[in-house]
Length: 268
Image 1 (tube, rainbow, N blue to C red):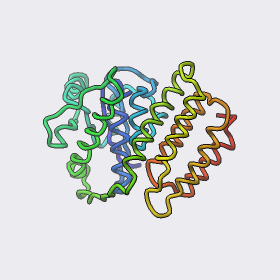
Image 2: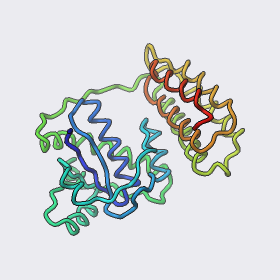
Image 3: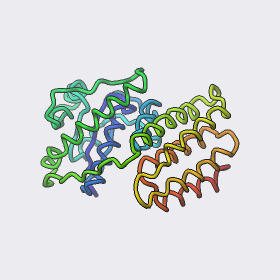
Image 4: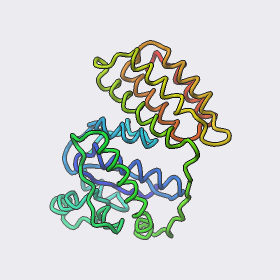
């Protein structure tokens, strides 16, 4: 069983699941032997992530749609190899509730006297700003995390942004916002206008990032999906996941996955 890093936030619907997803990506890129989970000090059990958190993560190439909030408990803490609080307020609440709990704050491990504010009820732009800061702090904290878990410091694997990445990322961010709105409040979105907007974003979102990037072929499949009837909330979520895969160069397994989704579209 792999050691688990437990990230604790307030309700486990915003910063904590975003931080968990961002740290998980860092761990996977560096092939470190850990799992990452999140929980909250306030009981919002089984709540999904905030819509802005989902939009933000899609913009950053991650999908947290399947996450459901959990209240932190004694058993969870006992099983965790490392407990990481997203801010000092959460750390104080944890120490008051769980006497003797061993935990660290993200700011402490990153070497920064900084708490990322809770962006609840803020505009999505604030969520994206704070998510980028969360990612930077997690990267800064990774060597300390390695030391606490008995691993040698992980050598970073820099991946310079290829030409066209900025335009592609911006297009995906706009598409993600629209698709989250379509999934959560389909009654306020005109599908014909939404489809035209989503199709227009595909031009920038499928500009190849690297040799062998199959984004153009993938975009053709996405256009076929958009040509189907107005999507149900489940289909809109699947479209959001499909767009999110364009954050990285597209490979044949991505095309196979999207083909399978379109084949089973009616069941979504």
